[in-house]
Image (tube, rainbow, N blue to C red):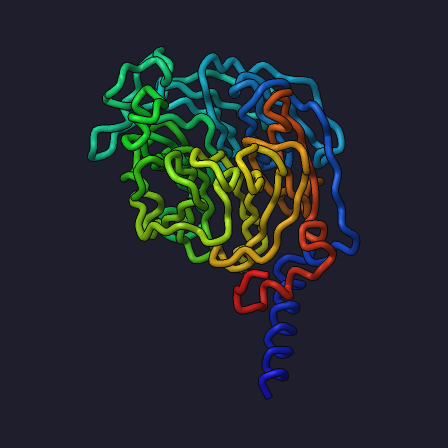
Length: 384
């Protein structure tokens, strides 16, 4: 009887998959491909515009490369005009793409899917702790601590547009309060948070703190029930990633815990590493993909991706992308009805010494090593 009920449950999940995410479920062959030397330097970000154009952002947001065919070919670098550190977000309602620098109170907007960019001022409202007011043209690393800190969006995963509930259409970005020094004595005063905009990016409100201090460089994903999953780096102790949740559209972050499965950079190092996170666009299924290095020692290497099929409760699938390379990374999923549909894009720093940025493209079948992901979605959430 138990075996029959399990089979029935798995069969029901598979049928739901075929209806809700046909392009992802129908992949017959694993697909994996790489594109070397997308940019020199560090700090990758990758997003998908509403027309399906994949935008790879490099050089601290100063240049963008576009692909209109799902990553098969890439255009030359486009100068964005960004002269400060900025992070990307796509407004899914208007179609605009923003490169945002809340530290300085400026952002750069593209209304044509990344082809041209215009600079504009932005308003940033501080949180109840007084953190968030922009500091003009001063770089975030030039403050003398302790500073009445602005927030920095640089080094984080890209922002998202909320799709569910009363806050649908809200722009939400992970950001960090930074004292102006990364010296060990000042790290306990840093904390991750977020900022949100309900007017298309003209005005941003800084959220309450992520409930663990010493954090920085975070990632966000909205689940199908409207809750928001925050996955954060921490700079002071050895261990896995910190997790918190929001039930109010990113205004507050609650219920912190340490993820039992996901490393925060090299597993024997107490400094962590920025990671990537994306939710796959499969209706009614909260499939998340996470990226980071997975070295048992202290070296940033072995770029790896994990998959969760239950909104981050468990992570039963893991696969190494690059045995030698790895450091900071960013993830995004191709959108339905576009050339990138069914693909996952990983933009990552290949090696610390070479300091170049590489792209990997793969599908969910490759990530699950040929297994039907519906089997994982129908499981009880245990890790392998």
